[in-house]
View (cartoon, helix red, strand yellow):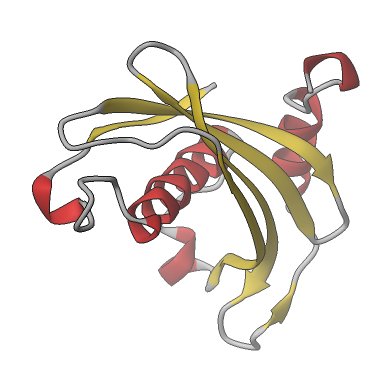
Length: 138
């Protein structure tokens, strides 16, 4: 599913006019929040239930540079569902539909008060399972 869209602004580029790594990761992070929202997580749970997410791994691959003014979007999918975690893949495409970067993220569902992993809520687990990418789609 499409989870984020953006444009590369001057402040997001390096001396060579390419979008810097920190802004790729920021786009992937925002895409992740849209994905978990689509799975049933609600931002108010951070204060109401003291539950949230902690990323424990990012594996970013770059394949094509984005330049100043480039339009882009991110598509996200669930790769695996664990007891307390989700493994997700986020693909960033340029306006022509060419793959620019991929980020495989492992995120743990987290008790914000106790600072420890929690089991994924059943509705999120079920929705994630329904959206899991198949081997053929990889």
